[in-house]
Image 1 (cartoon, rainbow, N blue to C red):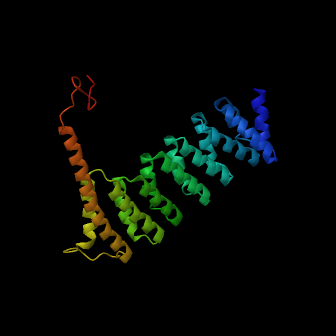
Image 2 (cartoon, helix red, strand yellow):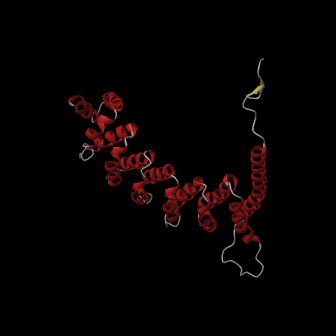
Image 3 (cartoon, rainbow, N blue to C red):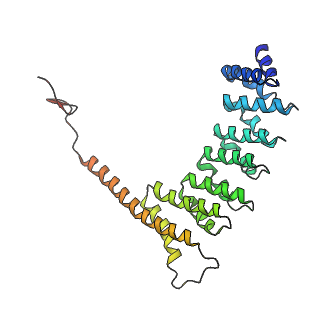
Length: 267
């Protein structure tokens, strides 16, 4: 495989065109090139490690994941960012603990890559995002809340409500959007009932102690709007259920005789 090793050497070229041509050819080769590429991830040359990571990101071979996972600890933040995004693209759920640590990386680009990965992995990332929503770093909390918003899962409701009192306006905005997304994406009236109950608790304070912190006026207005959306969503679900019921009660069409596929057969 001298041809592959020669191309990999060209990945470290200072000539951009040489590097680009080598990457294109390696991507065309695909899977057979992966073992040779991952063997270069331990080189001391940052330029080579970066170029190899970009090439692996284009090939997207699941066999590279154990090696890519280790690159989350690389000294170069660009490499850590590429590694995080590639693990997300490969849906590498076994790397969730390491990706959760990357959420707290000192570089914003790495944090962003980790949030991207968790979003790609999906529902399994929710517990890690919920934990990150409690972080001291406001950027981590922001990313976590926007990530939870996009999951549209009822298990995120308590975390979203808690974030209404966050000191950061973007976290509060993401929390409110999370509630709105839950309402619009809900497929069960029971979930809508739960959301409505939580919203009502903010307005019905009879017999309850005054909360230490009050909701902002903007949040209250959005919550009232969300209640209206809940009513609309209930009507939509009822209509969908009625249509499905009508369809199920229709008698089956004739399979033979004069009619076929709803049309009169030519005699």
